[in-house]
Every structure is written in C-alpha cells, then in structure tokens.
Image (cartoon, rainbow, N blue to C red; front, side, top):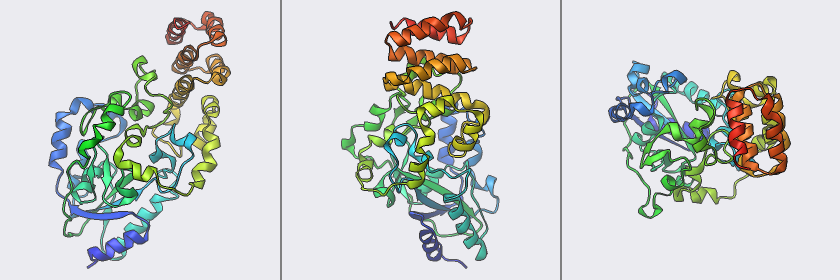
Length: 373
C-alpha cells in the first residue's frame, strides 16, 4: 500500500509547498457556521456554490476514507505592481480554465495515486481551508484566511487543494485555532474598506470588495464606490496590511514573466473599451467568475477605478464610454467617475450628454454627479 511518506515525497517533487492528511468525516462545525449565517450566503446557490453540499465529503465521494490536502503558494513570483493593486493576486496566475500550470500538477498527483491503486476526487465546494487546518497545515487569520505552517513564510498567499481518496491514512494533528498575534490590533478588520469583516473570522461576503466586483447585483451601491478604490476584480487589502504577511511581502521574488507579459492587455483603457471577442480571448480565461454575458461588470468596475484614480487623463475615456456603451450600469458609473474627477471638462461632458440620457439610471447618475460641481 502507498505510504504517507511516499505520497508526501511525490507532492513535494511536483512543487507543492506542503501536504497534510485528515479524515473524511463531515465538517459538522462548518455546517453549523453556515446554518447560523445562512442569510449572509443565500446568494451562493444561484452562483453555483453549493456550500452546504460540501460539508460532508462522503456525499461528494461515498468511497472517501481520507482527505489529502495539498498547499499551493500562488504568489511564488512577483507580479507587476500595476496588476497587483487592481486585481487579487490569486487570480493573476489562475489556470482553472487554461489548465497550463497548477491543474497539470494536480493531475500528475492523482495519476501517481491511481498508479498505486488509490482512487481520488477533487471537489471544488468542500471547505478547503477548514480541511487544511484539520490536516495541520496552518492556522486561521481573523480575516477568515488560512495561514500556512510552512509556505510563503507562514503567510496566507496559499491555495489549499483537497483531494478525497478511497484509502485510510493516519490523520495529522489539527491546527484549527486563530494564530494572529495579540499585538496586530485587528489590522485586517480595521483596514477592510467596506466593513465586510464584521468580526474575527466573520465575513459578510455581500460587502466584500471581491464579491462586489464579480457577483454584486446591479450598479455598485454609492456607499461602496470610493472605498473600493482601484480594485477591479478581487481584493487583497486585508492580506496586504496583515502583520503575518509582511515577511513574504518583503521577500525579493523573481518576476512572474507570464503575468508581466499580459499586463498590457489589462490596462484600464483597453478594459473599458474592449469588445466581446477581446474579453473572451484575453480576459475571461484568466478571471472567469464574470461570464461573457456579464462583461458590463468589468466595464463598470473599470469606470469606477478610473474615477478613484483622480487622474484627469481618463476623462476622454469615460466620455467615450457614456457615448458608446449600451449598458446603463456602465454609463451610470462613467457619469459617477466624471463627477469624482471633477473639473470643467468633466462637467461639460455630463451636461452635454444629459439631454440624450433618457429617464433611467444613467440620467439619475449624471444628475447626482453634477451635484459635485
């Protein structure tokens, strides 16, 4: 029978930063947490996130006897600063669609298990972070993230990959505690710009910048627009300010050449004016939570970021978006951004478009924007 040592050695050979083992027992405490916070997650099923269905591994894979958890450090190389201040780092080298990186290594790991008589399944909706902590791979942060015991200098720049297997292995000692130092002064809770972290290890996802960028309903509420700043897809604010992450943020990392090469495709101007073909070819394969039919979300987020940039150079692009875009939510956010930027050029653009704005959302946003002058 394949031993734990052999499995661990193979995982490290494949480039995983760590590995741990736990049982395939149900995550009863996680089920209780979800039940007690059901109103915070009632949006999830419509988005294909069956959180409740993932709390019992044997409902997913009846033959499961153990869970092997692999730890991937998704921030092994430095990203261009212009990218990591607009997009969550975990998405910058995400291959779940392209399958040209991590997916290949997971496949190789599963093939290794199969060659030795161990069958496996990798579910997407199992509580991966809790599984990793139960496998002794790290402790939690107050920001709800998992902090590694070994990868990224014990930081949170990690992705746990839970692998259900049909063999029983001795479980590792759980590390389910919060590992934040007392002197951190709740840095992540204080720094969350939209107040999504409502307590240690308690998140209101509906206020989270990441949620708002790719799942939010309609035009972003006014109260969140300035606080969301330059984030377009995802957010790393709570990780950037965390004292536990500073050792890795201070590391002298080699450049991620793949991400550096695609940075030019993600400029604000190109994203605001992109065609459906451009989106599907260059953007969606990397950041796929927003489907092609919801491309308006990207453009709306970009218009808001342009406004928050306080850079007058974006005024012509916002004016063009008001003139050319069909979606009222994009037009409306472009109007808000012009109001945020201010100045005579922005005011003139808003006033000149107002007669053509109709009676809907775009008109309301223009009138509100003009109140800033």
